[in-house]
Image 1 (tube, helix red, strand yellow):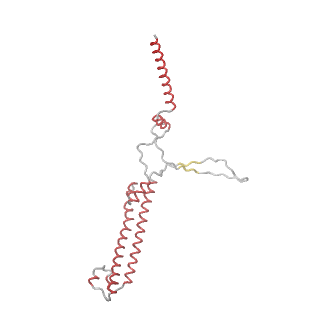
Image 2 (image 1 turned 180 degrees about the vertical axis):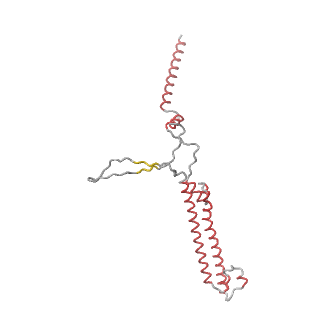
Length: 232
């Protein structure tokens, strides 16, 4: 009998413990719902939800870095393919003029060196075999020992070479700026859905003895809202 009574008492305490534990779990579940329930409830309160088909936002930082690394890469990232010929023309022309002026600078420098070498050696003329190796434009100047004209040409080509470097850097910088601005304005709202409201007059402080009335126009330039997935 004692064994049966002890077994019944143990069973009763076990059942009471399970009931109390179940009630405690329900209370905690009510006070602290699971993460999925909180996430679902937060989305259920909002009548708008992100559209899964919406395009991914462009990152202006990526466009800037890519344009700084390779000209035109930022325009490709922004899908502005029609700007690629403009970018490469703006950068390619200074590159071409740089090498053109650099080549002529060295040609003039070579012609001046030939004149100085033969003049220091006591020669009054440069051999035709040496003159024939020069550019046709420089041959008469070397034959007449006109080093002043050669130095003028050389300085002009050197100055144009420096300008070519400056224009190249300017074109590269404009390429970066253009890609960055395009990335910032990629999703800027430029549609016709702009609202204009007439604001009601509001009381304000006015100087004694003065009177007047006014009207204000409020332009609401808002970003596009997500379309609702379900009725609110």
